[in-house]
Each structure stands twice: as structure tokens, then as C-alpha cells.
Length: 468
Ligand code: SAM
Image (tube, rainbow, N blue to C red; front, side):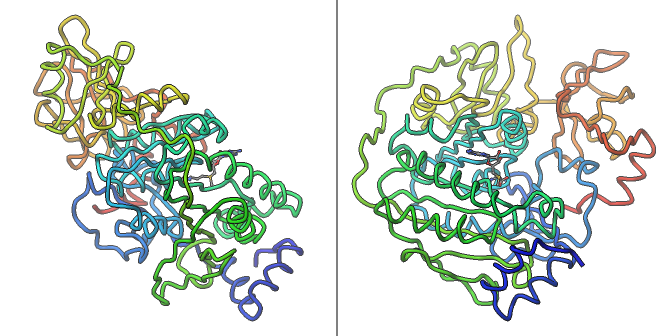
């Protein structure tokens, strides 16, 4: 039985009344494991139990060691707690037009990869994380997810006031006291204190106030936390509805989903308790911004971004699927970015610190092309342009670890290495050996348990990869 802090217990007894015992028992029960699939990479439905609130979410019967599943590194799926997948219900309410969407507190990328799947290709996703090291992880996960209409930034929420009225949707998945994670991560219990919940509530208000000017008129802000504390949840929504003109967004939710509806200043709010839903603790609400918004700018000017020359384009465009993409020169490299979003990218570039934008395609060295790893795992690569080699599980893990090993290539030069036909990265065959193009900083390290060679594969087989 997990022992919970006394003042937390007291508060939850007040909130849940008779339901408290079931709640407290559920904190000691088994955690559900879930994934969300990348439909641009996996087109079929899986033979697994579906997450009710999300069209691409599934529960797993057992938890594999994800690090040892090559398809995880290929961006074929994302490991995400199921309550968080509820975001999809709000996004379905967004207007059906090209949208500019900001995920403000985005690392490691659960909500951003989900948004990236939900948004049409002519919409822009700006995925932001204030902590630089976490922004790099976010960038890695979004590159593996593979869509070109994404910009990853590393900015403080206050920097977004430089883009007044720019976004149609803003998601604020706020840093919080993490009470909803007590079951999944008992160390969150040790870090919990009453005073920390107050600090979190203050920080959340500051984040909301800072980003509010960036939301367009009639735009939607989705707020969420993984905590139960009303001060970090309903009270923040109430506070926002006090200082701004807003309208709550009400969803029709089937009773069997087990989600509890509350209310804050006329805004419907949604609570997830582990004794009622097959997931962890969570809170969310969405509001629409009313009243006129000052400084809204939709640039009509032509983008000033440097585009590839005709010759460069003729080399590069073969590598990509036939999509409305432009090739932008960035230092030595070329980026593929949706043509209709170039002006928006210009505006974001002028206001924010960009970590990556679009899909890096590669560089042209003298006359030959060096393809970028990002292209290999992207959803826009023209795979038929490259010779490819499908690897076994053993070979895939060796490649992802950047070990020295042999491969029998048919072709010289850059080969696309795949696992079950999903691209993992590049290898350049130079005759007697090959150069491993997998990014050093992404390689499998398994630092806690030193697996090598055969042991690594044995372990991967013990916790088999997800059957896709
Ligand atoms: N949305 C993410 C996902 O689905 O994977 C999880 C986000 S996590 C709950 C909150 C994020 O907010 C963390 O990545 C944290 O680094 C970031 N954060 C911490 N302090 C912040 C602040 N003052 N302003 C904005 N973001 C902050």
C-alpha cells in the first residue's frame, strides 16, 4: 500500500467523499501502459484494446523495453499515458481551416506528436519548450514523428507576446505538482509538498497571462495538468475567466468514459481519476477567446527565406514525395517546409529562438548529396529513390547503437536501412565497411543496464517489440 501525504489525503477526502477509498486503493493498483500510433507510418489498426478518447491510442498487454524496439526509434508510435490523449476531443472542435497551433510547454512531445497527427498538413505547429536540454529531446521526438509543418522553439512564455493574436489554438500543458503521477511514479510523492502546490499555481497563472496575448480572437486555449489540486486547476481557469472575456468549450462525453465534469466560472472542466478511468490522474478545460484582439497580424508579405536554386531543386526534389513543399536554404543544409506556411515561418523566426523547422533534407557537397537523418525518418521521403536494406532485429539494434558490424549491401553509397520496411537511418557503403549515419546523440545507450550484443537481443526478445 502506497502511503500518501496526510494533507493530500485530507484534501482528496473532501473532493471525493465516498469515492476516496476506491481512489486511494487505485493508487496502489497496476498502471496501464498505452501507445499512440503514427498513422503516417502505420496505416492499419492494431489488434490491441483501443483508448476510447483517442482514435490512434491503444493499451498494451505488457510493457516491452521500448528502447529495444527499433519501431519506437523509427517514430512508428509514441508511448503516452492515455488520459493525456483526451486532447483530441478538443482539437476536433477547432475550425476546419489551416490553423496556427502553439504547444507552449511541449517537452518531451506527447501532446505535440499527437497535435502533429491531428492537424492537416496546411496547418502550422509551433512546439515550444523553455528548458534547452528538454527542447532537444522534443526536437528529436518530432523529427522521428516526421511531419514537415512543425517548428520547435525554445522560449520563455513571455516571448510569445511578440506574436500578438498569432495562434488559433494554444495548448498549455502546465508544469504542475504531479499528484496524478503518484501511482506511475512514486518518487513524485517524495517531491510533493503543500508549499510546492502553491508555487505551481502561481507559476501556471504567470504562464497563462504571458501567453494570452498570442491567442487570436475566437482562438481556443486548452489548459491541462496532471494534478488534482483545485488551486492548479479550476481556480486557474476561474482566474483567467475573471480577467479575460472567454467562453467555455463544452464536450459531450459518454458516461462510460468515467470522466468527471466540474465547472469554473461557467467553464466546463474535466477531471480524470485512476479509480474511474483506465489511465492516470489528469485535469483539462478549454476556453475560447472573445472580444477583439489588438495587434493581430497576418502577414501578406512574400517570405524572405532563401529558397533553393532551380539546379538545387532539381537534385533535391527527387528525394521527396510530390507535396506542396518549398526547399529553404539553411546554413549548409536544405529544409523542406510547406509552401503555404513560409510567411508564418518568417514571422516565427523573427520573434523566437528556433531549434528546428520543417524536415532537414540534406546538403549538396560539390555535386553529391549527403542526405540528412531527419529525411530518413520523415513522412515526406521518397523511399523509392534510394537503395534500401531491411535489417533483422539484431542488425537494427547494432545500427541504433552505432556498433561495428557487417552488412551485405547490393549498392554503393547511401543506403536506407529499414526494419520491417520502416526507415531507421542511413549507412554509406564504402566497400570494405560502411559509415553509420545514425546521429551519435540519439544512439541507444541503455546506461542503467549495460546490454551488449547477444544479451541486448535476448532482452529485446524477452519483451517483444509491439506487433504492428
Ligand atoms: N506537454 C508535454 C507532453 O505531453 O509530453 C509535457 C509537458 S510537462 C507537463 C510541462 C513542461 O513545462 C516541462 O517540459 C517543463 O520543462 C516546462 N516548464 C517548466 N517551467 C516552465 C515555465 N516557467 N514556463 C513554461 N514551461 C515550463
